[in-house]
Amino acid sequence: MKITKIYIQNFGKLQNITIDFQDGINQFCYENGYGKTTLSIFIKAMFYGMTASRENIKTERKKYTPWQGGTYGGYVEFESQNTPYRITRNFAKTPEGDFCQLLNLATNKVVDLQGKEIGEVLFEIGRETFQTTAFFPQLNFAVTTNDETSANLLGLDKFKNDLANLKGAISQIKKKLTEVKKEKGDKSKTENLRIEFQNLQANIQNNQNKIENLTAQIDEYQNKIKALEVNSQKAKEEYDFAMQQFSIKQKMEDDLRVKQEEVNNLLLQLNQIQPQTKPQKPLTIPAIIMIILGLIGAVSCVVLGILKTISLPISIIIAVCMLAIACVGIFFLHKPQNTQQPQQNTEIQNQLDVKNQQLSIIKDNLKAYQNIQSPNFAMVDTINAQLFDLRMALQNALKEREFLITESERNQDKIDEIASHILLNEESYANSTRKMQLLTATQNFLLQAGENISNRFVQPANKALKDILSKFEVRGRQFIIDGNFDVKEVALSGVKEKEYSSQGYQDILSFCVRIYLLKEIYKKEKPFIVLDDTFVNLDDENMKKAGEFLKELASDYQIIYLCCNSRCKF
Image 1 (cartoon, rainbow, N blue to C red):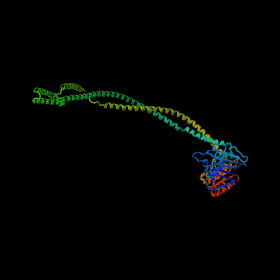
Image 2 (image 1 turned 135 degrees about the vertical axis):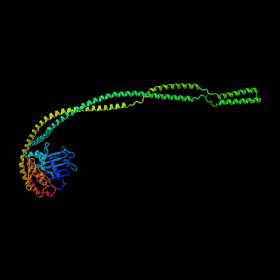
Image 3 (image 1 turned 90 degrees about the horizontal axis):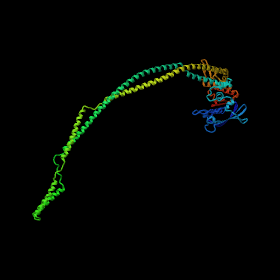
């Protein structure tokens, strides 16, 4: 197969670019940042598409989204079996939105891909195998293999699904062995269960002893509480009686004070009443007028009689009458107040006698209570405090006993459960041991079978690797390849991993292994080869030899060679 033309509409930083290709080596030497790696990824994506972008993961689909926007994709024209084709692809955010078409340019008919990728149809090789053989990404072309690669190398491509199933079966057996080991555990687990069983039994017996002691203590508390309740009731009754008597005494003393005050008030009233007549009333205007008129009239009549204005007898009679009027005024002016002093004294005295009699009765009654004092509640308080402490102790003891009983019941349930687990563990341990023996034997058998199949290619692979390595200057160093496609160096101290070699040697080894795989795997159609700065770590001598080897390969393969400096050009 050979690519004849590429058109990139928009892919990463590349936009509206057309490139024509020729047979043999197609070199592209540009500075860093030009877009050489983007070009190589575009070619691979045209044949195998791109995986879906995942959130927060910068996959190729996300990384090469057009910087400038626009339609994401382009086309590739190539020849296969002397027939021209064109691949047209437009990429979306997910593979489900992609547009892909393979057009036969000789007939202008669209090729039915039947749900496969174009590279799978053309090369009968999957994406992963293509990436580890014909596609050499920049600074990352270490060789990894898969079941498809192994099947093709061993000539078992018809049975590649069986090889995949073989590895899958071994993986499942390992997984199952891990599960069985977890299920199986070890004998110490059963012993630990037995120890726990015994500890729980001892705990139950210890709790039983505590429960018996608490029961005896509870009975003692209850008896003490009953006795104290009787004493408390008796002390309360005595206190209530004493308080009743003291209250009677207080009431009598209060009555005594009231009666004494009433007697004192009556005595005060009696002392305030005077035995003599009350003072005369103040002069009043009518009495004074009568006195003045009477006196004036009497004098006037006498004067008139003497002057003989009127007859003397008449003047005397009138003068006597006027004097009588004056005497009446004087009488009313000096008339004593009519009081009821004797009657008031009698009433007050009677009341005083009654109060004194009542006071005497109260004093006589109070003599019977003169020794009664205010009762002391301290005894009742002391007994109640003792009762409270005993009741709290009883409540705590009851709670503790209830907790111990519940704990013992739980422990007994655990004992029954542990006994069941011990029995199951013993049975499971025996069954798991048998399963592990069977699984281990099966795994060893499958591993040996897989190793036998892989070893079929080890000898021819080492011969082919030696021939390819001879194209480079390895300075007498010897390298071998094992059944897992791992390249190692044979040294005096033993076999060493290739990672102990310089980066230049690692690149040469990886390149040679890829070329070996390339020649062995592609049976239907020889692919084009994409090299992206593959030889940047080589010294001048090996760079020269790499160029000569590429020219040799170019007779059988179309090579797309990308580099960043003139030293790497051929």
